[in-house]
Length: 76
Image 1 (tube, rainbow, N blue to C red):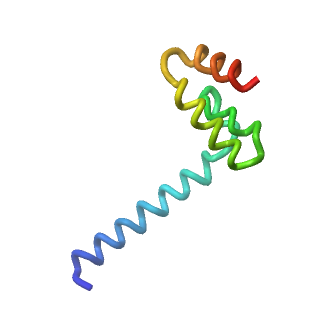
Image 2 (cartoon, rainbow, N blue to C red):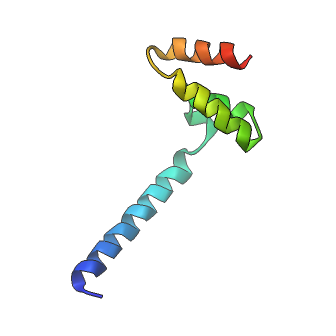
């Protein structure tokens, strides 16, 4: 392994470690609102979550309040 590839690998490891730390710190339901992805937490089945995610992302344009209202109407 060359010095350049060692440095690149080390940098990648550091970045991965930092990103994993941020993920662990912020991957919690309390940080999701007002993102439309908050609706995913209403569905324990992963397949249902995929469908809800598709619906939410399809309607994710404009004002946040309107997006949440639109997704809520469709899912109710």
